[in-house]
Image (tube, helix red, strand yellow):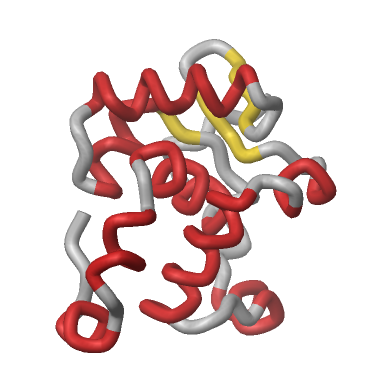
Amino acid sequence: MSIDRDTFENTSEDELKELSVPDQVLGFLAAHGDRAFKASEIASQIGIDEGAVSTSLSRLKDRSLVEHKAAYWAVTDDTDRLDGYSGYERATALFNEQVGEEEKQSWREHSPSEPHPSVENE
C-alpha cells in the first residue's frame, strides 16, 4: 500500500511498521462501511496480495470484526467491538492522518442518487 510523501516524511518508522495486513484490511472496510467488497477488490485497493487479504479476512471474521456473505465482506456494525480492537484505532488514525477525517454530511451531499451499476438490487 502506498502512502503520500507527507505521511512518509512525518510518520515514524515504528508507526509505519505497526499497520499489519489485518489492520489495513479492517481500516479499508471501515472507511467504506456502507459497502461490501470481494477479497480481490480489497487486495487491489490496498495493494496487498489477495491470499494475505483472504487470510486476514478469515481471522477478522473469527474475531467478529467483519461479516461475510457469499463472496462479499463488510466491516461489522458493532461499534463497541471495533472500538475494542486496537488495530482498528491505529488504522483509523493513520487513514485520518493521510486523508483527513470523514465528513459524513459532505459525502451525502456528493453521493449519487442512483447506486453504482455493479451493485445488484436485492
